[in-house]
Image (cartoon, rainbow over all chains, first blue to last red; front, side, top):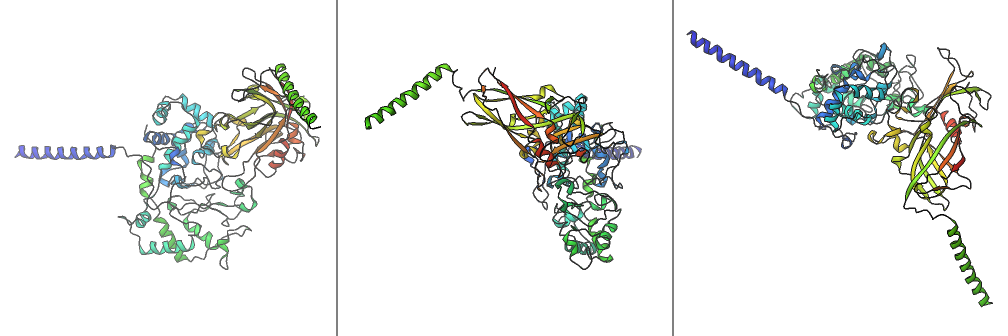
Length: 350
Length: 274
């Protein structure tokens, strides 16, 4: 009897170990790195052929994204203000604190679906993803470093020259290779598996409740002019009547020098919007409810206020409380749990 | 009469023939435009009739403000050389972007390869053309590398993608004091016209004639054309710039006036044929 139970226990342990083992093995399998356009997305804007994405290039970009050497005193990395759990925004911060706790003047935007963006930053001042990282690196209130110094610091490490060799064939660390590696990482950061996406693609798990479906219908009707398409933005710049008492940031006009563009900012994508509070270019609203209240009741008039908001008798978008609740319910279906948990995008363990 | 006329023509033809033949004998061999050789341009920064000295000498602009210069950098690019015969040679884009810095002696002489010939004129862009401003980062090497230069010498705007064409900084009692008590003026002029929305375009071209002199480019002989670049012209021109009114001019509509001024800061001084 004893012998038999010993055998049974032994067998069970064997099975358990085997099972555990197979599980760990499964998670150890390196996911392939290939850029796949989600079925419901538009064509990418980034010219992928000029920077072919490879596993080594992507991994190097990921390493650089989380590399504090990019900042003057080695205190912050890109990942400091672009946190995965908040869809790569700075959760809870209206504006971010950079180096020496200096405050910026704009809310850190989400890093997601960059391949589909025609321009970057709230004012669209940067028109090429490859050129984007230079801005935060050299901004006095962000990383406050010089690109040339960053490259020099990386050249002196033991870690990076071999990684550049693996990614680009030669160990030299150049501006172009550095920026292209970061782009490779960011190009792969695609968020396209929210419940809404599954609903649109008629996939398993794509069930929306009655409230969410009604919210979607109201949203398309009342918000869809600007937050259009599957990225929920038309990438235009608009003045949405945010009071200029809070700050005098002139937005797009700083780039075009056109007075018509004063206080205009890029229409943001609403993907993962429930995860990226606070809201607006300066993070002035803490909740989606406050955002909708702005559109329905609190708009300030400007000569160049977007004409969309002048359709009714009152400035803004006519919305009642019931409609707001439904819109918010719908917006929550744009949260993509797969994206914010995707191990490929998280900080690499040393 | 008829015969006389034919004789005259004949005489003329012979005359021209002899003249050319004689001339050829006197002169060195004609340049072979299939052979490439070097030409050098020196950008000699001056202030009026004095040589420019950083941080030491005080100069006065047209509105009577005194100032010293601490930094003077500018891009010159897209060179086209013209021969006495009127033939133009466009230097290939990949080898015609230069950043001239007053603080860097070596940057003030630029070398290019052109076909052998007798050159009488050069034209170039002050700044960087819009195409290069929007080109893939892998094509931006040398002086156009966006990591090139650090600190105050940086000639690139990262927040509003584009190169700074001309950068002039200095001190002046006319400038307001900053929190440290320094009275600085800063002119960072750029703007290539905008990528998706039209905005200021400060790309300027200038054409410099060598007067009646010829820069004789031959294999093994590289002439040096000495140009003067007058920093006072940044201030004085169609708009007389006042440091007091405009201590800082960067990406703004007013920058167009400064660009119009500095377009005329280059002039021919002399040339050496080796």
